[in-house]
Length: 296
Image (cartoon, rainbow, N blue to C red; front, side):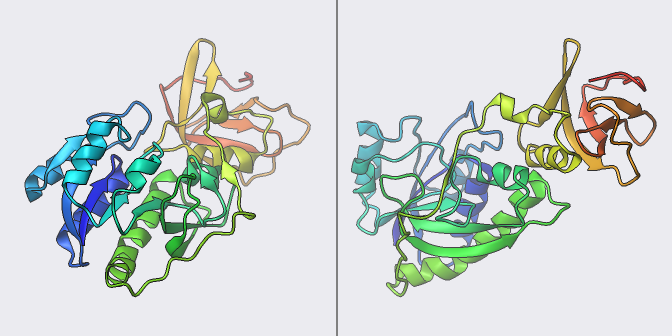
């Protein structure tokens, strides 16, 4: 099955390598990617992989432009795989391959369509997410599902570990559903348009630590925005401090103390009072010397 691959993030890179190195019945005949991305912290330029494999490639910052569509059409693909692309594909491009365009979303569709699914799953303290491949239509993550696997979220997971867990599940899925779909043995399952929700695009304010939150909420926010993402943050004077790791404090914390108060400092990291409980900052930058008793 002749397939054009579209992608520009770390998952795209790993999925493309998997498809090139595994006999799934797919022949990658072209790659569309981005040289750089102002929005994706996990951006990857796939041109190097394409060159190594001897596959034609093109930078396509305007994927729905006539020149991009013409380039893809000339490759006569049976299918297009679009994994890790932050722009919606238009109807003309969706109509090019006879077998359709396959998308990927790291959530349990029809639940949690939309933006930043791994971040929101952690920030909201969910216990489970999923790895979902689906046939793309003109909506955002609304097309028929080809394959879906649940992925548990443990308390100790952060953005990096959850990214890796979902990726591992997705790469294993490729070996199952791709050959079945290529051979016509897989029936896509339509999504119920009356169910599910859509997660919005997050802004900088969504990453600001509000010490009035309870300790678990702050822990979830920090782990959700940890590497490879942008990091949660708070301000101290004119400095914006990025927090990459923290932990809930198990010891008793007097609830009459005000949120944002530095309760202690030391080698293990400063302890900050929250709306309920306290957190210890384990990794933050730039380093600043907090003072016991000060308020953030």
